[in-house]
Image (cartoon, rainbow, N blue to C red):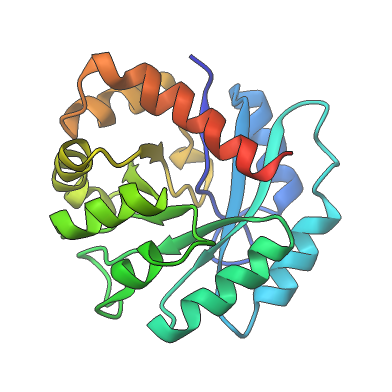
Length: 217
């Protein structure tokens, strides 16, 4: 199965590498598709959008690259506006969900799931079944993550997503090379979250292809 990761960070926010080196290392690592989704709020979204636009096509010969943003720690009333701005530039839009290890504003999950411009709700934490149903109805992917701390909610997220019929995607939230995905890490994380092998094709291939098609038309 192709190896993909749609949630990674560079020096444009709190990662450690410039975007070009980050992409080059992921190419060597064997990834087929990757998104750079640096943290944004109202103060830096224009800078991130412009910076990633500048390298959007530099590595297309070697890897499928999706420029993106992760809307992070903003007021719930700002999510729709920021998501729309990114989507108008044909960017992947992730919202930093209510992980249990950070003080995310209550209601962020719900606001993200109601927004038509959001593609992925990252590490949602203590998700509710109603939220999982919203994810299904509004075609927002729910993230299973390899990231320490954020991954503490994986089991609940996977269980509710499967019960509600919502789509799952597995990402790393990588900030440095040691965080990068591998086939072994992907498989173990999915199994640890309670995702059966019978769903690997759907989560790793079908859902990844759908995300790519949303951005590359």
